[in-house]
Image 1 (cartoon, rainbow, N blue to C red):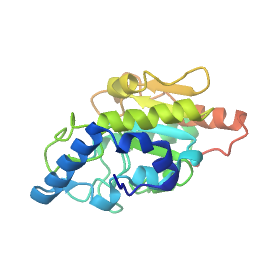
Image 2: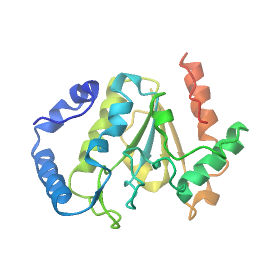
Image 3: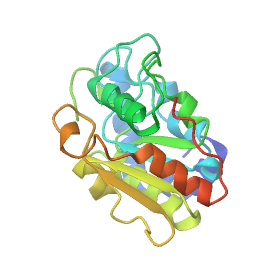
Length: 222
């Protein structure tokens, strides 16, 4: 099956594209885009992979679903289009950056492609969603596909940082080889849980300290 995805990822995930689940997933997604309003725009479905090639990944931040409101989802977990009001979780992420690193990101927009281009894979478990219907594309195969991406990184790369916020992300990261990667876990940055272990967890400085020890360039989280 011909899938338009960045070349190194295409090679790493090649085995997935011929599997029955992926063929069913493709048919489902095509039908949804034809008949419904679905986010993100088709060109941005694989944007996380396109902006952060397989060999360039340093950090993985796992999300669950794309945002389901207009002009929000851009194919990167937790990110929104420039000029769009910051969602509550992203506002809390920026608050933690300020607290953790002592640097203000008050005026930063929500398009996190600046992180992606430095090696931060902003990966949602499900890559598409029906407008106004959270979770509507769960259980159709995306989770299996993104599990394969995480497993490929865990197996084939070394010394990566996996940032897992909330129980869903922690469960999805269960198969990461923790003997050769750093896994940072905490509560989710949503307003419902941020005060119960996300604030003060210092994931950004921890990630940079680890990268520095490995001789890698640190991430500019501004």
